[in-house]
Amino acid sequence: MDINFDKLLEGITAGIEKDEIPFLYELAQDAPINRVLELGSFVGKSTIVLALAMQESEGLVIACDYFPQNATDWTNDHIIKDTYLDFWQNLTTRGLDKSVISIKQDIKTLLPTLGGQWGLIFIDAGHTVDQVLMQSIWAWDKLPKGGYLAWHDYDRKAWPDVKTTIDVLINKWDRKLIRRGFLVAIKK
Image 1 (cartoon, one colour):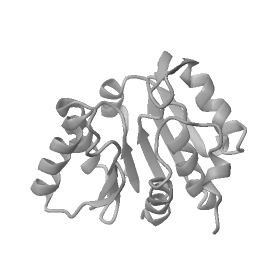
Image 2 (cartoon, helix red, strand yellow):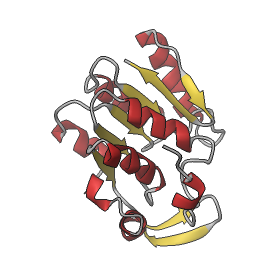
Image 3 (cartoon, helix red, strand yellow):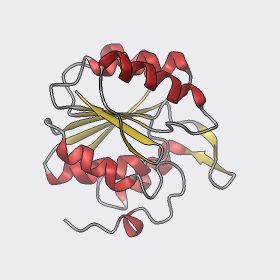
C-alpha cells in the first residue's frame, strides 16, 4: 500500500518524526497479533500511524496517556490547551477513530490492570530510568514470540535515560536493536 504519510499527518507537529513514521507502520503491520498498545499518545500523531495499520487488519490500538492540559508542544513552543481534545480531533478528521480506544490515566497506575497479549507495544511515556524500566519489563511479558517492543526518543539528548535503560535491557534480553531515527524496536 502506497501511503502519503505527509498528507495524512499534515498539521500535526508534535511527536514521531518523518523518517520514523513508515518504520512504526511496518512494525504494526508485521506484528503477530493485531492488537497494539501505545503508552504515551500526546496529540495522536503516532496513534494515527498505528490506527491506519490496525484498520487494514481489523485490529485495535489502545492509546494510553494522562493527556495533559496546557502542554507545551516542544517542536514549535506553543501551548496545546487540551491534548485529549486534539488527540480525538486528529483521529476523527482522518477517519481512524473506530480503530482506537483511549485510556486517560497515569501509565504506572494503568499497567497492572491491562491483560492479554499485544503484537506491538510502543513506549513513549515517561523518560526516566524508572519509568522506561518499569514499562519495558511489564511490556516484555505481554508480547508473544515474534511480537515487537518499540520505544521512542532513543539517543535524544533531552532524555539520556531512555537510551541508557534500553541498552541495558537489550543486552539482558540478548536482542538486536532495529533503529530509525529516535525510534527503536526489538523482536521477541
